[in-house]
Length: 450
Ligand SMILES: [Zn+2]
Image (cartoon, rainbow, N blue to C red):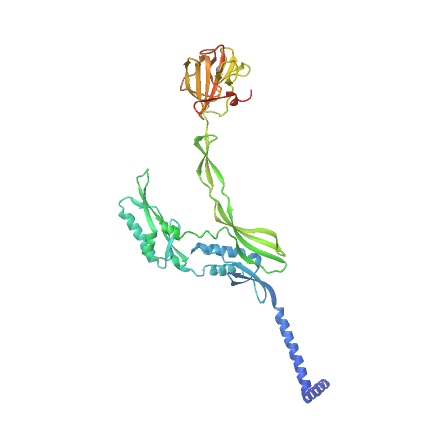
């Protein structure tokens, strides 16, 4: 022990005797200490992801989890603000920081909520049927407006009531939507409507056109995509974007006895909705390699198109729209077709002749209304049926008629029997098809193949 103390004394004495040596040793010792402190200090730094909302630092985040609270905060903020608060633009930066703990979802929510509602003042909003009308810092001013409206309604007389709901809500608003009592009253206009069954008079308060314009939402920015974040990485890069996408409306059918089956009538138009989709896009060396939808927020629900679908049973006598042959297959032969007669005479044949035995049943080619059933000079005993689309069929030279004018007949119903009454040289059915009220056309073009 004594030996060590003596050695130390000797070294100490020699150092004191040599100031240059002393300075060198001190410098080396100091440098070593600084290095050690610096290394310890550096050890506490770690690479972290820092998130910014509209350029304002939110804090260190676990980047995978930041979007849910950001979207939620923006959503919530937009509900209590007018005009609705916009989602802040989120950007990321990778930094070396020490003692950095990632924010909890709750902390992210609170910070973003605070940023989103910046610039809004606490006010009271007047809502007409749920629609924002105007704001004022004093609830008294809005209460006075409501009272004035109610007094105006009362002044209309007994039995006049108000159907619009006027509501005052605490909101956060930007200054430009704050108006005085008179201006707010001028934005509201009223209309009286009478309800048929009760004779009740109601007053609807609605926003004036003026208000419509001043509060029309800015739609120019929709359908565009906004960059809400980028992350920093040299080779692989991840980008997040929000895109407003259309949600196509659906068509729903409402059954009704009002229309016959097979009939469809539009009741109301459909409207596309929209959804905000948050995409994660991965790039490698500048090329997009994947795009994944991470979250979808419905911003506007689609409205169904409603179509009435007739379910009322069609009457048997309704036209089917397709003809059948007026004589049973095998009971006739075609004896003369439609067109110019090939007989040397200059007559034109406006029908189709089917030769058959007397008494063979003649059937209605389609359902319809009997508009003629009498004896004619040339046609003899004949029947004309008018079908639902206006087309008419004529059956001539009958020996016997089984229907009367005004009867509704169904397809295939017996109209009469084959004969040779009128201008005819033998038993046959002369069959005509008449369109556009008076134009006689080739029946074979309207009949199915034999
Ligand atoms: Zn004929």
